[in-house]
Length: 305
Ligand SMILES: Nc1nc2c(ncn2[C@@H]2O[C@H](COP(=O)(O)OP(=O)(O)OP(=O)(O)O)[C@@H](O)[C@H]2O)c(=O)[nH]1
Ligand SMILES: [Mg+2]
Image (cartoon, rainbow, N blue to C red; front, top):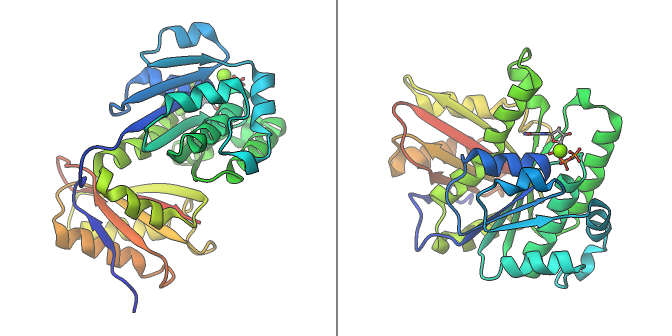
């Protein structure tokens, strides 16, 4: 029989000890903008000392991009051993951390390669690794996109999950947005899964989440909101049709729904059941309550493939 959705109605147990590693221009800008929930450890990795100087973080790690790339290319088989002094120092800062979020825009140098080394360091320190990364806009051209692909490939060789958000997602929704505004919006989009996760998942829930994500390397995300009647149906219908989740062509291996708004156990269960309709019967679905909202419901789906 198909098991019902796993419901998490607020974090169970003590708060997670979480680390955020902001890599390159994108990762450091997200740390600077202050939209992220408070975490125990915040680390900036980059190659521009001036940008990093003003960040309010526990640790700044100035990277030599050539060394960083070399470090990122080391075979992932030895991932329990740090591949460089840099990685060792990073892993040391993650000691005792339950989950490490690495944030970056792929396609550049210190960001993309830094994200790979960040994910390696999380594994060395035995922390769960979740990388949240953007893929360059189509208009940014071939070489950046090629480099992003290579960085993504390196990330997929490591234990942990990678949530990929294409920059094109923003332009498809607001085509006339100037690029710097689009980057600001993307910064919020990249910060949101970290915030939702940390608002809804506690230490006692982590085992469930790890099991749920065990077979999912790549994750995709989209959100839907509705503040009128039948919000559950409306948001799920939107998510089922989402071009960013693309559920009709990719068989999902796992799904997490983060629900903002007033939803009791039955409402969360209903959302999970509705979303399960078009997923394979063995695809586990978790529904987590992620805080209140003035009106209506906002549901963010993070789907594993
Ligand atoms: N969301 C967001 N994306 C950005 C920002 N700046 C650049 N990007 C995107 O992220 C990719 C990598 O750029 P950076 O984040 O600056 O990475 P980096 O490693 O510092 O790269 P370089 O500056 O090119 O060495 C770019 O190709 C853009 O697609 C930003 O401020 N916010
Ligand atoms: Mg940059």
